Each structure stands twice: as C-alpha cells, then as structure tokens.
Image 1 (cartoon, rainbow, N blue to C red):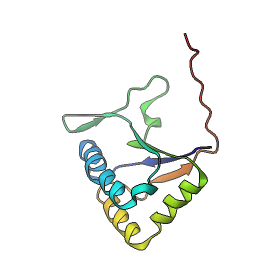
Image 2: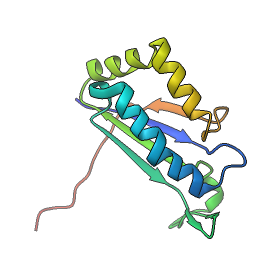
Image 3: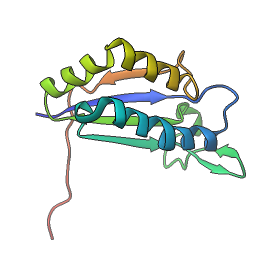
Image 4: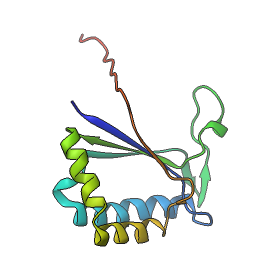
Length: 131
C-alpha cells in the first residue's frame, strides 16, 4: 500500500514566483536527490498554482470557487511504496548533516512559517472506463 505525503509550500516573502519555481526545480530538487539518494520517495510531483507572467505570479486558473482559496504556491506530492520507505526517508531527514543542508537550502526560497506537511489518510482513485 502506497503512502501519500502532501507539502503545502509558500515562497519566501520577497521572492518572485519565477525565482521560487526555478530554485525549487534547479537547486532544491537536485540537492535532495543527491543527499537523500535511494531513500527519496518513489515520485515527487510538484503542482504549481498560478503562472509567471513578466515576473509576476498570476492567479491560478480556477474552475470553481475563487483564487483566494489557493494561497500556497505549490503542493508537492510525495509517494512512498510503503511505511518502511517513508520511515527510511524520515530517518535520512533527521541525520544532522542532511537536515542542516536541507533546512539551509529551504530558507533560500520557502516561507518556513507557512510550510505545512501531512500524510493523506486515504487515497481513492477513480478512473474513466476503458473504451
């Protein structure tokens, strides 16, 4: 049974949306892959809200509701194959050198006061019927 971890991430005040996204993709993710290695989740998907237009973050395309409901800049979805894989990942994150490097890196682009991470208690997927 896979485990889904969701991280709701806001960019650091003063950092543009384009710089935030660029840093996450080109600096933070390569660093995480390098220092966590085989204990990384099976997948690490980033769902960005809004887009960059001329250096400014534009609101997300809302199908229903209002853009005010989408305060964070990205929801990161981490999928682990098992509790053991999640435990190995968390264990790696608590190693002092790795923890220090990741925290220092996150401070460059993440608003640490707003960062929220949770485990989805249940994931249910509905697929369209085969044709």
